Image (cartoon, rainbow, N blue to C red):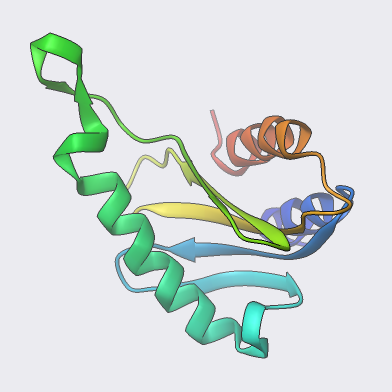
Length: 129
């Protein structure tokens, strides 16, 4: 089993997890996926989330650091809907392309703080030291 598969299986062990994917945010390609996808189409969700992730990661309002104006990278993006959470965790990789983990959670059964902490650990495991 690959590191990606193990990571996604671990993400699905979180309470309330409905689906997870590792997505390359420039192309919108899902490098791995598991569980359900909102609307049922994993490829469309990966492409849409990649567009959203690019906008968040590159927007100057979100990356500016106080008065200095120096850029700071976005680490997580959380979208809350009536029945769920979408958590995007950017993976710091030593190569071009940009990756993020997308975790879709059932709002009634998830613990958002725990999911964010766990996703951070999973993202760190994906990148060899």
